[in-house]
Image (cartoon, rainbow, N blue to C red; front, side, top):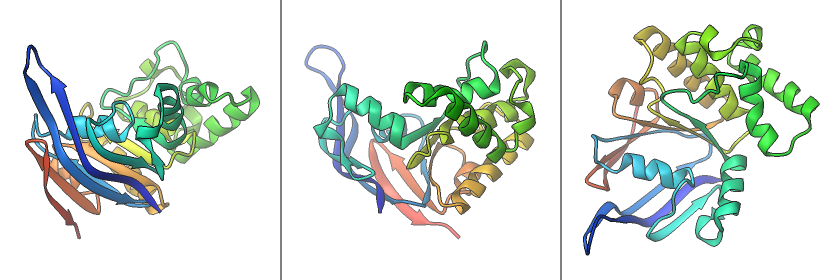
Length: 228
C-alpha cells in the first residue's frame, strides 16, 4: 500500500503586496509502505515545505496529497489533526520533550491526546521505550538523559501510536557523531521491521541510511534514486 502519494503538488505563499513565493512547484512523489526515503536539498530547496505538507501541518495550494490512502484536501483542520495523530509519528532535531515530564510521561502524551485509558497508555509507552532500548530510563527527566537518549525517547513517542509514517526532520542535527550514529542505527532497525521512514536532511551521511534518496532544488524534485 502507498503511504505517501503527491500528485502535482504546489505551495505558494503570499509575501507582501502582489508578490508570491513559489515554495513547491508541481511536485509528484510516491512512497510505499515499508520504504526508508531521504529527502535532501540545500536551504531554500523546498524540503521543509514538503515535510510540512507530508506531515499534514500545512495544505497544498494545488495538486493532490493522499496520506496512507486518505485525500487530505477533503479534511477540515480538526480532521487533519486527527490524521496526524493516527498516521504520522514526528521526530524533531531538538527532541521537543517536555522538561517537567519523565521519559515515560513524554511517550504517553500522544496516547492521552488520542483518548487512550491511563493503564493502556502506560503499558504501550513502556513497550515503546523498550523498543528503543530505554526501558530502564522510564522515570528519568529529559535533563537526566544524554542527547542521544533524548532522541530515543522522541522516537519512542513517535512510535507509540503505531503510525503508518515516521517523519524525521534532521534527526541527528543536535547530536554528536557517536550519538547520531546510534540514532541512525535505530532508524535502520525500525525500517528493517517494516516501518515507513522519511528522513528530511541536508547530510549525506544521514541520507546514506535510506534505500532511496530524493534530491530537491528550487521547490522541485530534481532526482530520485535507489541506493545500494
